[in-house]
Image (cartoon, rainbow, N blue to C red; front, side, top):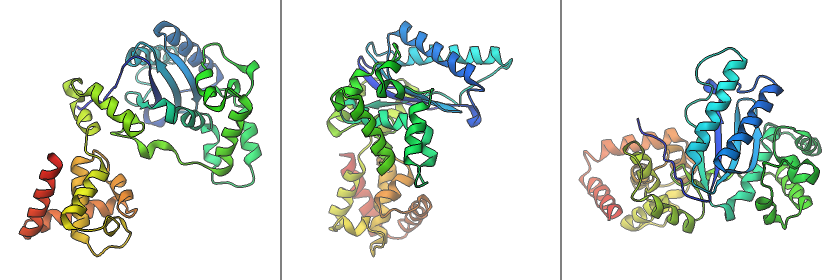
Length: 326
């Protein structure tokens, strides 16, 4: 089985999540939550990992961490085993607590750490986002929510010694009032989550940062990680789209619009994005006119059938694919 790519190096920043098995609760009461935080604090100290933000939800948690020695896997293994053991002993159970391995996204901190800290901290009220007229209630609820690091960001007297606040606060001039306004603005106006900008499902960063990361992992990775490495190093969707439109001598808008008279050409773009983009059909659909993933699947199947009969189309597909390989 292919293993998710783990990118580790000193002073890296990550957004880490872990969900309960079958989406079941990982906390049955506040005592569990206290034990969880005790185990987290101990693991942070043992592995010298810095915690910048956290939130505990009913069946999952979010962490923003920094690894000065590049040891995320060791830290998470110790922490998850420690809490699972304590939870199982307390509740007289056996077996896995979490659903698979944790998920870790490498972060370009200068461009995304502040934004992700807000994303983590507003999780307790995210389900209210579609309601109107309760903005103040949401903010008050977040301020009082005891199972996140937000309190220490808003009030210095609520700081926890094992949470590092300064790095995130420096992005708002070290001012807690400004950070509160930043969080409130996100609730009031809404904001797009950054996950659509993920590269290979493992890195969130601007182009220069992503290229630096690629250079770090080019010669590494176990055999089980290699498929994930290939996905991460995959050709960007914009590059595929550029090559397709150049070959067919079309404007990109002809393929990215909701309605198009260039069905075959767009199907070629879909197929090559899927082969070389390292992304899902849903993501491809968003690029090509906000199509549903089922439409992308249907058009790719239709293309495969057509190229068996249409030599011109088959040649086009082969030539564009060759240019992408180069």
